[in-house]
Image 1 (cartoon, rainbow, N blue to C red):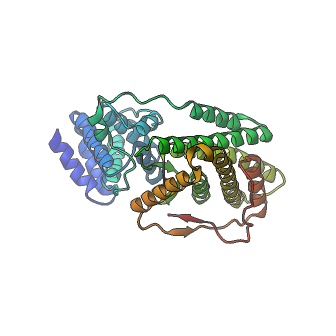
Image 2: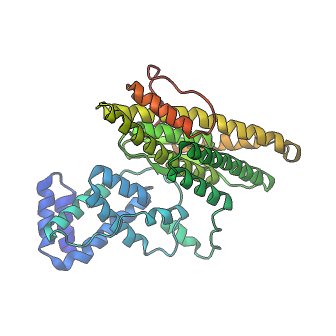
Amino acid sequence: MEPVIDQACAAALYAEGDAALDTGASLLAAAPDADDALHRRGEEFVTRAWGRGWHPADLVRLVRLELDERRAVLAGTLIAAETARYAELPPRWRAQLADLPGPAPRNKPDRFGYASDLLELYRLLLRLPAIEPVGPAPAAAADHLHRPPAPDEPRMLTRIRALLAKAEATGFPEEAEALTSKAQELMARHSIDEALLAARTRSTGSPGACRIGVEPPYESAKAILLDAVASANRCRAVWNGDLGFSTVVGFEPDLEAVELLFTSLLVQGTAAMTRAEAGQRASGRKRTKTFRQSFLMAYAQRLGARLADSAERVSTAAASDTAADTGGLLPVLAARDVAVTETAERMFPRTTTTRVRGATDLDGWNHGTAAADRARVGSGSGRTPGGRDGEIMA
């Protein structure tokens, strides 16, 4: 059945327009025996994506942004089938695969529509750009099948996850504030302990990177929040707005902290925004979009200052505690900062600072600032709505 697949792909994937897709889908709909070969062709496109630097979550996110949820489910089905062939996968891939959408039933709602959806997905996969690799592809991991199993998650990270889960679940702002503050302190302490251990053992470890989704709506405010979280945890974040993610560069314990804290703060901020917006609507206000944009921008700006102050305070206290028996913590941290900066600049030699639209709704700004204050992680002040627009590396 490969000739039918080749003919359909040639008709649909290398030409523009719906007519080309219809021609390819018609060929496939008339050839039921070609179904398995059609899916194998899709798995080949997925394999090519790994070679271009993409990860499973990146791929599904882009399909959802560029096409729709139906094709994202198809992409998840192809990814699950393609990755099942590997005896071992990189650690971050396992979590991403666990979050894939459920499998799509074949040939629903009908053969023609299903084939058309697949071909439109294949057209997108075929034209994926190469992006900066962040860790090994599964084929590379398969070369190390005899290495010992990865250790369990450090107890500190388990505690941090539990604290943030409680902060997201509670309906009491004061309790969420205390839980989030404690989690941030544990993150900073965990990062410092890892840095000191690496210095004592003369570890040759180097910074790595991960990608974190930054999706619409209000993606610029979310990207600023992620940048603030990354900076406070000794990482660098570079936003790619077109592809819907930021790449975060840092040492592995710090990357884990950024992923955990950003996800939790976004959940907490969204919940606080929803409550504040409900109060605004009850009083007769209708400017929902500008309120949300201003709320999230203020939330991100204020938290950035507070996170930075909190990180500095913990580092200063730790430096005074450890200076006597380590020869000084600050030089160790400075060396890691230099390593992270050099790695980020090597990965992204042509980054630019992008100005983003400022806040225009005073009530939204004030509510967002108050929500950031309730997620207490330090002290500091944010810009006012009349100040300069936010800036972010992109």
